[in-house]
Image (tube, rainbow, N blue to C red; front, side, top):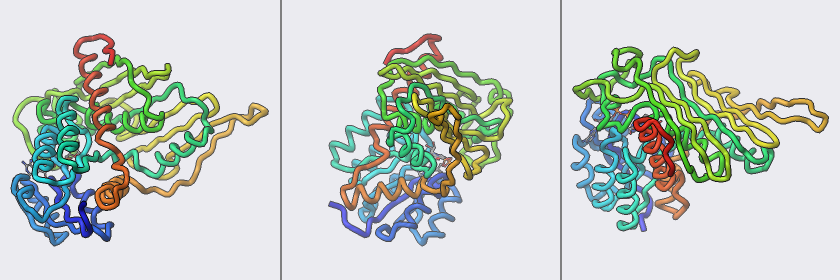
Length: 354
Ligand SMILES: NC(=O)c1ccc[n+]([C@@H]2O[C@H](COP(=O)([O-])OP(=O)(O)OC[C@H]3O[C@@H](n4cnc5c(N)ncnc54)[C@H](O)[C@@H]3O)[C@@H](O)[C@H]2O)c1
């Protein structure tokens, strides 16, 4: 049993910065070390008074570290997680769990064998507005949800036109595995974890190969061409007959710079989450009809919050208090299975049964 203070290490300093901010809110946690190959990692370590290591293996060799956040490129999630579990650490891995279901399965099996916590950072599910919609659904207000459309569409948001994000081997895919995995997670979570039975997907690469619509961001450069999609759409059939439409792009001639959300259609009511350009005010609307047929739109005032801070709170509580590890690695694996089926469906031009 690990006891407080929990000594954590963070591997990777892009989104790793949000993990550091989350751990810093925890009174029972010490940020012991940060690993990363870039200058940002050194600066981040210094700002938290933590030790800095370059290669992740150096950090994992430290016996005074109980748990790690794995915030490295997708293609290293399995390798670093397996090494961390073998070194006796609990692991919080960034999304997506892995590039493929086989990689994900190996990670879950290793965590079980090691008797350590493995959790995934689906931070958007923990947003206060998503949690609000979850409560409305659980109250029965929307009835049975039979259709949902979940999306994350950017106009010019390829996260580094020469970076690991556009390298198929390092990323596993484009916006579908990057942004779509969040929106698939939110949808499945809100719909009550129905089992996906079939997917029919298509992917496109219209701007990336022309070197267009990149974001200004500091990322590891990877030699090579643009190898992933820049837009994907999928129709997902769920057991019980409900369907989910999932849409995602890094680059498109769409109306908004960055636009993500979900619309849920229930037999008694509907709900919408819409976040344009990360503007976090009035993001939710609830729709239903009065008994006399008058349509009602509710716009609740929800205090922005949640996200990585809540994910890290859950990770710490899972390790120190035996609380449930939510969002679970099992959820991460289920999302990876669907994303993988979407890529196969697109490549083969047909519906894939799961
Ligand atoms: N949950 C979210 O909202 C969110 C947002 C952004 C990224 N992510 C995920 O986080 C992961 C990282 O993405 P990013 O945007 O931070 O990427 P990034 O390129 O900005 O950062 C990657 C970090 O990993 C480090 N790294 C790479 N190889 C390493 C090694 N061998 N040893 C030690 N450190 C190593 C780099 O030095 C760098 O600090 C990805 O899986 C991505 O999907 C999640």
